[in-house]
Image 1 (cartoon, helix red, strand yellow):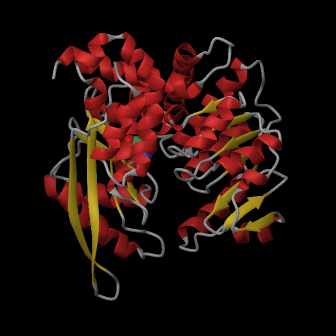
Image 2 (cartoon, protein in one colour; image 1 turned 180 degrees about the vertical axis):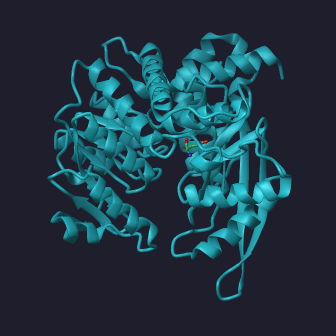
Image 3 (cartoon, helix red, strand yellow; image 1 turned 60 degrees about the vertical axis):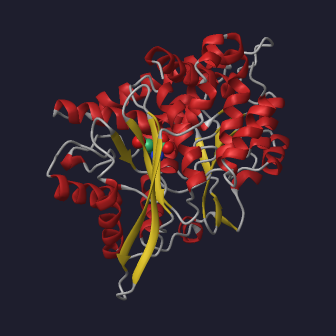
Length: 445
Ligand code: GLU
């Protein structure tokens, strides 16, 4: 019999100073411990011990020269977490906050998320403490070349397929893929999120944002409700927030906030227009990385240094980074009448915040279910590359939609409490876990 506290104490002992990894694993183990204890085959196969230990971790030095001619040194990583159900798959994050513990939490989450997508993909994550903010294109290029020169030793289209994440978008994927191709002379699509003219998939840039809205739409339907007319607070102003705002607007909801490192924008008219997003995109990529100018240009309100969780809305979608929504924020949202919360960033809510929503019986979609649309379309990109063909946007979007509906169904199946409350955290964790655990049992150690 596994006991949560003693198992977690041992895991903490083995992984010191990795609080995010401990937070992510604790949440999952809390959800699955009864399932594990009811199935002795899992204990016999040491499933919890094996699933919380990455298959392997690569750490490497990345040297590059800045525009002033000085040599810079960063640390790169690839955490290959679990390949029980398919090749390792997961993004690369370039952000100053990246540590091994961050990437282990993300790789662990990715394993369960990828399992939920219904596609055959294992879980991985990688990246660097390199911060692309304020760097010139040539600096980014030199960094990416150096990073890939090392990373290419560990990846391959049937082994490990990286993609983007925070700080790694179309530009970085292009540079990374270019370097891989130079060294290996292969066009196998070893990265996803590529440009359309060299093997990328249509709808990939919007996929995480579209997917989270499809998932939210299913949540509302399951509660006899509709997304039409709902007001939404989003954080972030990158690809993910953009896709979510576009899809929310198409479905008849109104997104009234976005946020950047400098604060948040409240726009009562809604942020989901092409013109507004083109401007946001300009702000993000012109190295200003601030949202404030949006307020002046479009007559909206800018609130400096704060997050959008103080705005009274029907639905909240953290779309920026882990632990961006605290218990205090959760209490404010609930007292202002929030009715649904959909985590779109990975582990966007602090553990206490997620628990608070669940205690208050607010339907709460966890990131590993709600944001799985991004990696799902990455999986579809892999299929297209393997078949050497390209699907239409409509075809990809229909497949993405069908996948999000299936993920929602799986969460309801495993997560419905006796009182009828759908505990999406429990549902996603159990559904994602079982598939990987069963595969590991069937393949032996
Ligand atoms: N970084 C994204 C995620 O967290 C996408 C990963 C991918 O496409 O492989 O799921």
